[in-house]
Image (cartoon, helix red, strand yellow):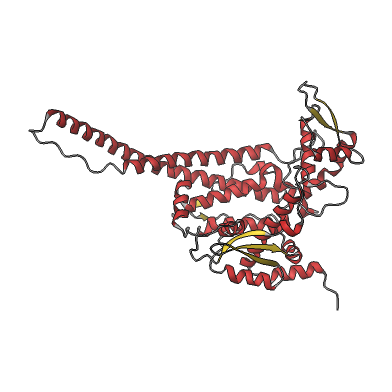
Length: 437
């Protein structure tokens, strides 16, 4: 009987989890990897490093609180955002504990306990088997290659050109790049006469950048590194980012106008009734004052009517702007995933919204990257099936202030914003190198 590999076992464990449990594991994994990245960057920031036994414990939040005041920890907030933090949290956590994917400990407080969660080594392996690393930098890089932080620094030097990156006192991370064998950067005086140290690439640094550019793009898709050949075709067309930026700005500008009108309408609603006409025998000064109040009331009433008409017109423009934004963003993602020039779809036909502002007829884009597609599916589901209403009154009030035209339109707009962030500066193009590797 053939031996089952550790990767296969991890994949089987992942498939044995339901969608809710998988979402929990992904959220915990993201937080775990963020904590690891922060811990690894301590040296570059001049801080003292801490052992993994400390930083791997993640803040879940307060539990056993009789007041039940809502999410209080980083993990609770993220899980709540994904609509998987509710009465089923305890059973989901129990499954993950029983399968050896997480560890849990409690720290007593005055009221309730603060819960900390640690992702186990098996938990990381299972989440990676599910494709969660598609949207994260690689944590196990090949020998001789730089960390994401140092690669970003080398990219900054490459962008800075002949003058180099200017620093008064280069940090330890810059010193490490200069002391490598061979050295990748060198220190000199700023030719501009600022008195700062100029950090430029050595010949070995230029070669390292050129030879490793493609592999670094695959390892660290969030770093927008220019192609080493200035004459080469850009990794990602600037026109695409510019167009998506214009569409997003149009949505934001109309949304600001809607919020302004909503504030005006709320203020005008406090007018009350039209003051009555004073008696004929009233004091002349009082009669004149009432006349002025009545005139102000009539003007405010006309202003309220005009503001209401403008709001209806703006709402229509806002829906149309979001529909155009979402359609173009989805078309760009699909084109990039299929290897087509995304510039050819910048005039995509606007999407359709139904009478409840739900997205209709626009399929969820797929990239072939499991983790990326799972993230897209989450925001697409809210845009198509409808966003769940906030449970707590303060959450509803906050949404009313931030969402200019309701929670559902905000969900559709959020779908477009998610896709724009995914492709921005060629991030998706670099992520696809993982799929094609």
